[in-house]
Image (cartoon, rainbow, N blue to C red; front, side):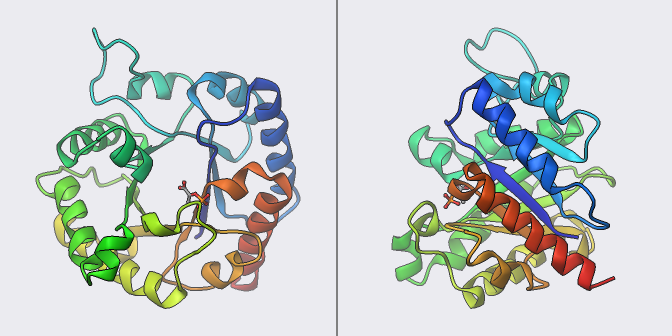
Length: 256
Ligand code: PEP
């Protein structure tokens, strides 16, 4: 299976969001096999987008969640609230939150655990900066990020184990990582998550994110080590995003 996730970040109001969701829905119609497609709009439009995608196979995700279930946490949005509005996925530890909002491993461990407990699939983002890559520290850095989350974490047997490898230097820069670098890191991520969780390595889904476009997506999707894509900028452009979904569908249908 392949999974294609669109991270809309802090973009779009209600009208544009609903229109974009309708457009994505169209691209899933009439095909035998399609990838799992998840859109992650801003919190403020989740409710309206949910109405547009309900009863379809297009899934809804959130870009972040609070680390607590409920209570006096002004401004936070909890995992139960996300479930209530129809989310089945939540992105955890995106580098923009790690870097701009100082989210650390301790906080992200809590968020990840809460998502699992509430049966929402957490999409854990990991990835090194340019400094770590150039210093030959990328693998050590990513392994440590995984340790912070998966060590001492109880994983329910039915949970999806999803990690997005997003090297920071590739996000929004137009300079995506090479297939060789991605495959190397995905193998390591899969093995590390399997080691911590005791899960079969095939159960671990590893996505790539960083300057994916409709032009370069095929080269990633055709790799068996790459279980899908997490897409920022190109997910806001209907023609780009639907083209990527179509490419993933073609690959899946060719494998039947
Ligand atoms: C992202 O923000 O997760 C991302 C991958 O962005 P972009 O596709 O724009 O590089």
